[in-house]
Amino acid sequence: MSDYLVQFNNISKFFGKVIALKDVTMRLKKGEIMCLLGDNGAGKSTLIKTLAGVHKPDEGEIIFEDNKIVFDSPKDALDIGIGTVYQDLALVPLMSVTRNFFMGREPQKGIPFLKTFDVEKANKIAADRMGQIGIDVRDPSQAVGTMSGGERQCLAISRAIYFGAKVLVLDEPTSALGVHQASMVLKYIVKAASEGLAVILITHNVHHAYPVGNSFTVLNRGKSMGTFQKKDISREKLLSMMAGGEELDKLEVELQEMDRIHNLYIIMVIGIHIWERNCSKRFSICSFSI
Ligand SMILES: Nc1ncnc2c1ncn2[C@@H]1O[C@H](COP(=O)(O)OP(=O)(O)OP(=O)(O)O)[C@@H](O)[C@H]1O
Ligand SMILES: [Mg+2]
Image (cartoon, rainbow, N blue to C red; front, side, top):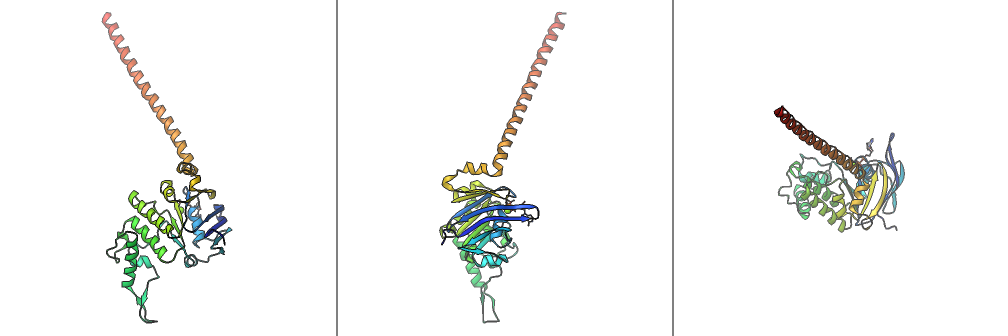
């Protein structure tokens, strides 16, 4: 049996002429937080959608618990324990916390053929689960739209864990959050991994990824630039490997050049001003002597 829970082997995905992924290999173990980094359009969401059963890879294979998997739908992925929290969260803002927590998998009560939604049980489970991560839901019937961004993220993650996820895939969970809420979500992710879940954390933000990640895979325009263990790579190196690194260096040089031209311009203006004053003084001395 292999050490890895999930293996992406040489995955390629094409959308017409667009090469979204080319020959990407990425592997992760139980309890590991693997951060998937890359600029906009690098292929991060496409890669995790191949694991979530949304897209079928055009080349390569995905191995889960030593078995090659081919999904017909996202439900197949959910059923074997791949819990995905998408970039747009897939929550319904006008529906209650409880309804969003269960989303079609509500507990029921009553006799066969006459079953009804067990609201009390569902409310209790939703409130308890949210309480375990430090979010006090006073009224589980409150609309999700009234919760903060961080609380909504935690609800989506908590839901995936409750329904038996072995791999938790999080697409940009901290992108819309402030410092406090982002750290709340990151702490929760670390707790989930310490309980044995494998986590794939997608982010643009190296400062969010570095403190919590055990390993880092960098994608650049659909290609993997490699997977690095934390001990083998610094935060600065990761930053410069992402496409933004080089571009930011270029921008800095351009800004320095603009600054230099601006300073030269100011020196020139001051020089002209002094020269003008000297000239006018000489002129007035000359006119006095005449
Ligand atoms: N369904 C689709 N049809 C056509 N092209 C697609 C589709 N999904 C993704 N792409 C293309 O594949 C490439 C990778 O997109 P993807 O969404 O995976 O990037 P990403 O790394 O998640 O970017 P971001 O950080 O902006 O979310 C992009 O060029 C995108 O336009
Ligand atoms: Mg994306």
